[in-house]
Length: 177
Image (cartoon, rainbow, N blue to C red; front, side, top):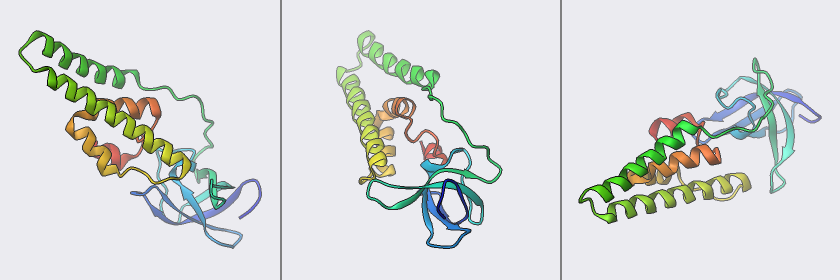
């Protein structure tokens, strides 16, 4: 599987982890493929599905598929993706309501401080995980990201998903979120 564009079949795919392996049609070793290499991330591959890709190297010099297209999909040209304004506005509106509630009622200021800290920590956790995903470093467990959202950091998580474009497409993560 060498050259500009090569074909093969998905030999194994682990959707929970977002990666798998391609068995090249021209023989040779299986090639690693990560979900980030797929042009259409809305459609997840299945074992036996035909894939066309270019071959590249990761930061550690290992062979991997890049610019992958599943059979039946058209290659997608990446354009600057914009953050979803309604989602960000909803998160900011919620935090504003908490702030106004603290000012207008007997709600302790500690509630607002706790929300703000939880949201900043959650946003930073998403940013660190996004950076680790790009560099191939150790990632933050998805359960930890979900727990941060559960304890009040969901507005920060929502803003991070939209502005950082991280964990915004993975269906299994979004369903739990």
